[in-house]
Length: 102
Image 1 (tube, rainbow, N blue to C red):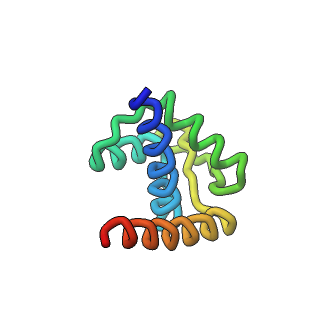
Image 2: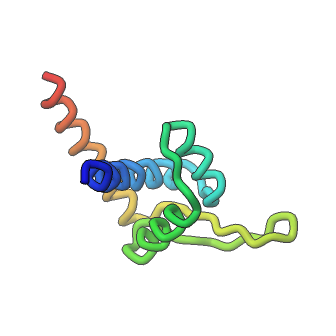
């Protein structure tokens, strides 16, 4: 039960992290998996790609396909809505963690 609760929390953090990177530069899934590993998240493609698809269907990111070395890569970048959500999430997280810390 505890694992399921933590998983739900972490998926929220991961979505914020995805939006953060999608704002900086377009990225592809394999790169994001490695990026998340650097922060202690062990995420499989079977978890990441449905999450990205969900974020795309909600209008938070948009996908562009590019052929790189003969393979089609899907690059994700932030949308206007995604940027607004990211900024609101940053404000809320800052307020919440400031309150918890004090």
